[in-house]
Image (cartoon, rainbow, N blue to C red; front, side, top):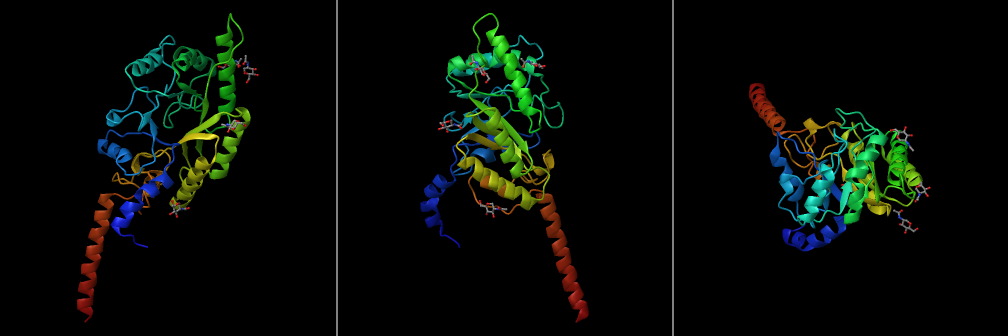
Length: 321
Ligand SMILES: *[C@@H]1O[C@H](CO)[C@@H](O)[C@H](O)[C@H]1NC(C)=O
Ligand SMILES: *[C@@H]1O[C@H](CO)[C@@H](O)[C@H](O)[C@H]1NC(C)=O
Ligand SMILES: *[C@@H]1O[C@H](CO)[C@@H](O)[C@H](O)[C@H]1NC(C)=O
Ligand SMILES: *[C@@H]1O[C@H](CO)[C@@H](O)[C@H](O)[C@H]1NC(C)=O
């Protein structure tokens, strides 16, 4: 069905209300080769994105002009600083608050149970992480900031890592005083795999951390064909929107296919920087039909071969007659 543009304009607010998800955010993974790609995340009319993180403590320059109330920046302490006395994460967040930025949440370490390298783990042991947390994150609760536990990998070792981390944290905050636990407000979950695995992994977190809000801050069914990737995307978005236990979620894939470390189809941008179907759906739009692995170069190439085939076909036909 085709709708007239007047009808479409009238229907837009309704569409926005339907696609709007206050939970949905952006894991911003900019690529220095294509700085022009950043604009796409904040320029789609009716986009449901309300927040972002960039694995860093300070907002991205690309989004500096956007008010915090429209596109909430959530700082992250990615890994342990070399010097354990380093409190620069806390100082930075406090300075941002003092300067008037409404920092409402912070995120703990990124995949501390994973090795450093291609997949971006921060490789921090639980005891070290607890000391860094107490110096840099725990005190932010007094400023009204909600604290997200470290985001472990989707591997079996994640929950045990968190339990050791909390055990160390309790010992440290209680040392020489009354018994206490470290404070946290939500857990962060990463998942790469199929939908059943995702739901089961979230169930393990619910069992280990009963009645704690879950943020799914990286997820994808990596290295699959396009229909499987899209089916997973649809099922997981619908599930997160429906589950009261899910506070927020952010799909890992804000980059081009050729830059992907989660497979060529998992991405929201084609090799040209155009929104793929998933990219457009995530931003509240409709399918673009753009193949994640396509690029202008390959499109031009196929146009050339098409023309060549046409000419060849005509020549051939001429010869036959
Ligand atoms: C503290 O963390 C270490 C690993 O870093 C672990 O061996 C130990 O069991 C933890 N302590 C508690 C009380 O959980
Ligand atoms: C600390 O957390 C543990 C495990 O969740 C719990 O059993 C204990 O009661 C808590 N202690 C305090 C003082 O809140
Ligand atoms: C925690 O429990 C309360 C009361 O049962 C419930 O209303 C709330 O949704 C729960 N929160 C989470 C995050 O599960
Ligand atoms: C995913 O959802 C979109 C609508 O949001 C729909 O057009 C598409 O067919 C769905 N794809 C799969 C594989 O479920």
